[in-house]
Image (tube, rainbow, N blue to C red; front, side, top):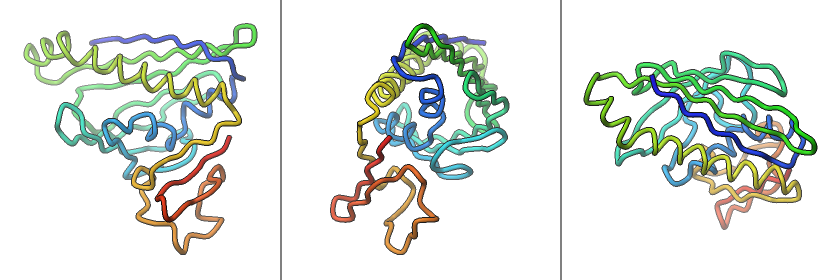
Length: 192
């Protein structure tokens, strides 16, 4: 079993940081380098207790699927996503939130097991642990920037939203935090 713990200090209210950390659209934005997209289950907005999301992304040159379920949820201090289907023997990501002065301390605790014994053990020690650590650090930099800049509008390329286009989509079908769709540019602006 490998454990990764990353602490990020964010100057924003705990409720804001908690919601940004469980926002599917923001996760897709933070994982754009691997073209990670939510393709099944909860595919947009805020994920809740017992909801699942299936991610498709390219890691190590291979397209991979990873299905997670939110197994524990205590707004705004704690939630857990655990793998139900994927390439790990087990994969558990705990998200802790606490306030300290005017900051929120966000702690990611990731525990996982690789499935194939000594070869995966070596792969993990040489490559995978560093890759996952950098993935979470990159994600947290984006979350921090969004949380600390509430006036920020984020542009999400349309292909990351799971929609081919938004023609014919009415107000009730689009996530509440979508602000403007620009069909010529193929982007959605999200305002917080």
